Every structure is written in C-alpha cells, then in structure tokens.
Image (cartoon, rainbow, N blue to C red; front, side, top):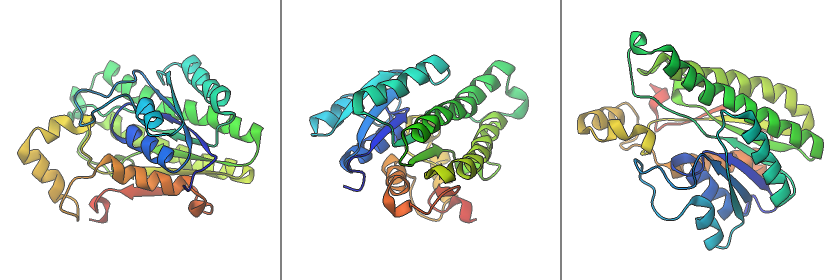
Length: 258
C-alpha cells in the first residue's frame, strides 16, 4: 500500500482514466475525494457498476464524492474544501477532467467549440492545480500534482487544433509549477496517454478500420486501458518518484517512439 495515509483529490472520476486512478489510489491505501459533474459513469464508455466512490467504500476503502464542474472556480474551491474537511488534508491532486472533441478540420472549429475545449482542458487544469498547490504549501509536508495531458501535448496529432493546443499548454504549466513548487517539496508531473479504450474515443472505436489504424500507430499490438494510466499515476504519486518532477511520461504503447 504505497499511498497509505495519503489523501488525493481527483477530478473527472466517474469514468475511464479518472475512475481507474481513483480505484488504484484507494487500493494503494489513499483516501480519495472523487469529483465530477455526475457520479455515474458515462454511458458511452466501458465502465459498469456503481459510482466510483461507492465502489471504493464497498471494497473497504475511504472515498467521498462531490459535484464539481471544473469550469466553475467556486465549485473547484468547494471540492478542495470538501477534501480537507472530509479527510483532513490534500496530499495528491490529479487534474484529470477533460474533453476530447471529434477530430475536425481547422476551419470546422467554431469559436464556441474552441473556447469550451480551452476552458476545460487548459484553464480548469490551471485553476485546480493552483488551488491544490496553495493548500499543500500551507499545510506543509510536500505533495504530488499529476496532470493528465496527452500524446497531443507532445506531437501534432491529427486532431482538432484546440485540443492539441490545450494539451501543449498544460505541459508548460507542469514545467513552471515543478520549478516554483519544488522548494516546497511538491512534485509536479504529467502523464501523456495514447489511444485508450474510453468513452472519449468511442467514435473511433466503433469504426473497425479506425481502430486498426490506431493500434498500428503504436509499437505494442493493442490499445491502452485506463488501468495502464492508473499504474503510472500510482508511481508518480508514490515515494518511488520522490526525485521525479517536471516530466512528461508517455503511456502510449510506443506511439511517440516513432
């Protein structure tokens, strides 16, 4: 139980990556404050069973849920307060909530769609990370901040420009925060997932030819699973990563090795 005694606040926990990370952290002994716009899993995805926090508590772990729309600063602050009130502190923050619009041409992206992607994938990450960092500094004892970026934060994948821009932007945030928060013993890192079997990729996964293409672009003969990302997050949150900060960790089946 590498995270025994730790408290984690994770955004976007109802489905996919966030759900898997919450499960893994709880399995490793952490108390988890789950937050999302709804407790139930996205029906487009591959998750089943009760809400994440209920799964954790049913298995003997410690977890609670709070509604949090990450585009609302007040709700983000309320979620962090709930974490501290429920569990006493916040040692780990995982900024996972995000959106991945369908692949579209540069000229097919309107202002409203662009602004929504930037607000959720970029501005909200800055908002929750800043709040969590302030709490960690005030309480002392260091901490861990993990940002979910993407292979789109390392390359120019064939996706919407707004999505790629947002994922590159949070990589800059990770690097700056790692420099500024290091003296406080706070490690800040990014995970850059490749193509996973999640609700966000459902449109591509429903197309056998598209799925085969995505698999062929990696080195390993399969798509990723949320548990692959959860394992990387558990490492970055643990003492084993105590001298790891400011990095981009691709978990992509070899996509970026091309």
